[in-house]
Image (cartoon, rainbow, N blue to C red):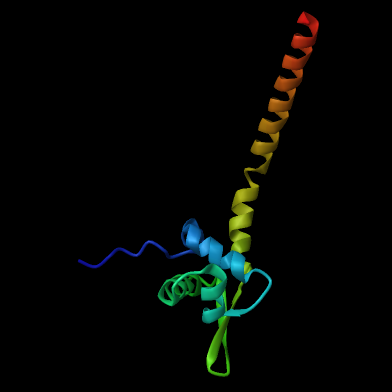
Length: 114
């Protein structure tokens, strides 16, 4: 039975921690597979497997440099993820404000008792 494909968009691709590590390693630079193997201390097949997924969803691009292929992050698809996450920013800010208010109230009550 064929395995169902689970990685078909940037959201699913970055759900895998190893692929996020790979993106982190490529952030702001171009690296070959061998350089990624060294940087991440992974096997070459593991690096190639995860690069393949990231290339499929356009999160990394490759170019030939001599006999090597060099990879870099394509940040455009990450914008979609950032936009989605940003909608929750106000929720977290409100929760942190509420926590601050709660802690301030506890401190005031503690000072009144002491």
